[in-house]
Image (cartoon, rainbow, N blue to C red; front, side, top):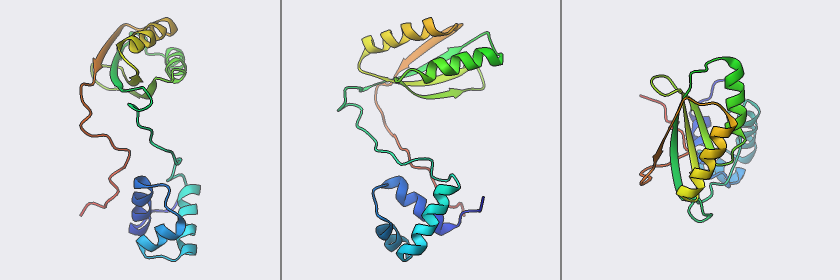
Length: 156
């Protein structure tokens, strides 16, 4: 895998902001003609710098305005339990992010749902699917910042 330079970083930053830009538009914005821009883009894709290109959907408009952060503790820390847990949470479409944590909480889930009732239905399916020691839920009151864009500027 090659290192990325400032031009690659600019290209990735532009794509993070708007993945619908054409190769010609990208090249124009970073000062490259179409072919060298396409070659860089292909290399970044081939080397895994670009994982996928997606559309960001407005959750409220599709009826999923509620965000819940679910803290999970378990007394089971073996590979078999982790595999069972990972399979269970990966199968729930409401779970949009899952992290194994350090500290007091073992796992943190970000769940999106329609309302408190929707979360309650998810919760009941979760506790049926895998043995948990403690589950604590925190409902987000307001989203102050949300971004999928990584800070790609090089530190000075």
